[in-house]
Image (cartoon, rainbow, N blue to C red):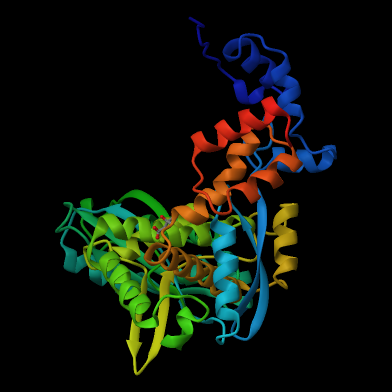
Length: 444
Ligand code: MEV
């Protein structure tokens, strides 16, 4: 068995040394791995260096496809939306939904609110009423001490919106928070918020220490941590579609009434059944994450917030909802989403820059509208397939390409298989068997 080695100071090695060390210690001295990793480097060393410096210990690049979903009409503007995702069928489903709604008025989206939240979590021993009074006396100081940090954001129309003292000592002895709300304009704002919170913590420490009206024990505070919350229930975007119910099944042999009934049942199940709600929302994030990644935002933050929001009343539920009234079908999503169009990777990553150009350089509000809409479109596409043909038909068609690529099929062979499986069910076994047969017979 290969003995895996441990190393100190790995990060100090240069890229080549890192790769050599990995090959020596974990890859059986297989020198071809070096060429393999290098084959994924960018041809322009400067561009590669840019990518190398996004993270630590970079050895190569990890490709995922960048696709586009055209025909997204949102608030009367048509977008061709960039999506970075590895899962087949996602871009196709979004594009299909976008086209479906294009001639039915498109999507209407609006940002409900853009407030972000952060906390100084601290432990303090003393009479809470005294802490309240202390906070009232010193509150202005917290704003004054952060004026330098907030100057630029205030110029852009944002900054600190509010600061509150919160008592959490019923949940954890001596646990309190300073909870601040922020407007971070077009930036996601994580660095801004965290810097302000750390200054709040310093002010809290200093002001308590200097408050002679407090006992010695009350002059002390233990700052546990200062951090923004990725849960942003006040940074909400909504997108919706609507049409006459008979328009939903035009051109198909399904009755509109049956479609609507099953669609409503499917959404209702995702409202009441967490097992289904999880998959339902996962499908929504297939679309949202793909846009979030392509536009250089933090998909972990966006997802984490969405899942917490989905469970805000204590049970995990669907993020989309449906209503049918007076013959009109209305389907919508309401989802928290902290996105930025300035800062972070947005002006650095060449593909992200491209994505912004493709979208017409939207601001954060517009990007939130686009992204939520893709989530809604994705969910509409998934539910439409699920309650009609079933999901596997479309999925397996795309999966066919993955199987063929694994088998090393030529373009000619791929064309042949697409034709061949137009009417047949795709299964791994069926594809492999036919592939072996045509290779043996050299018929394609
Ligand atoms: C697959 O990635 C996503 C779906 O399962 C979503 C859904 O079931 O709603 C198709």
